[in-house]
Image (cartoon, rainbow, N blue to C red):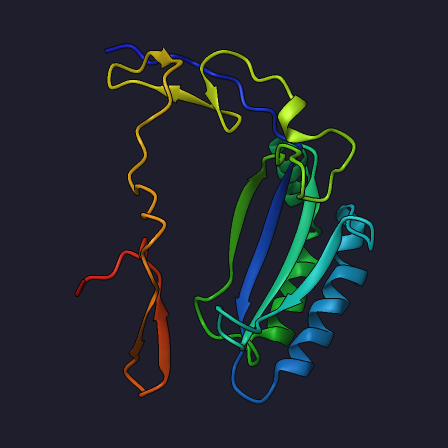
Length: 190
């Protein structure tokens, strides 16, 4: 079975150095990470224009610190890693070892994929209705059949529109608070 190749335009690479911090020392660890960016990362090309420090808030552990760095390509990321002064990094690691949870530091690397401009999503220059789409595209993404061949047919809707007379139901959730169930909501007990 052969696969079709398709090109995806990527804008950049986003690399995150994720570190989990021990309880009660997050501010000290954040200051130490700032020191790393200023004293070590800057020698490898980091600065305020391509790096930022993120702190866990919602959906990730509150103890998480992440150094997020933007690069134009994977090659540029690899050059950055190779340019980190090893002895200085080793010395910094010795200072940071009591603040960081053992085994938690890791790099996560993402490709940045541009979002197609649509009306109502912040780009009012071209209305979505007048944006031409090439054949075989639905919502800007190519459609593929089971054999890996590009197809111009849009898939059938999985959720059919509700009849106009359908009313939402109000039930109580597990805490006893009212919850509105709309006709098209996919609930396991309905």
